[in-house]
Length: 53
Image (cartoon, rainbow, N blue to C red; front, side):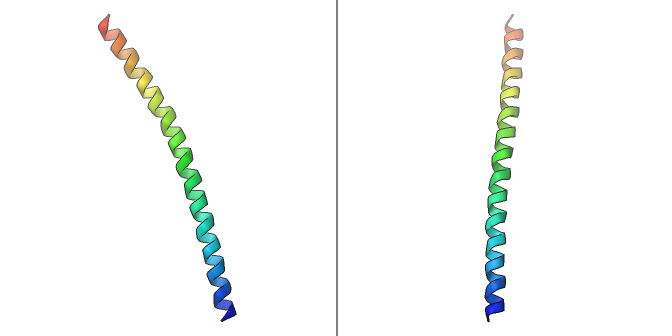
């Protein structure tokens, strides 16, 4: 019985760590996408400005 309890605790810890890692990765992806989006926005704005001239 104790052995099963230990493995259960271990699995819970792994799941928690996995979730933390997934959150960190998601945040990093959002930051990277934010940078990409801002670059796209700048390119679009500069292209629009050139067309108006």
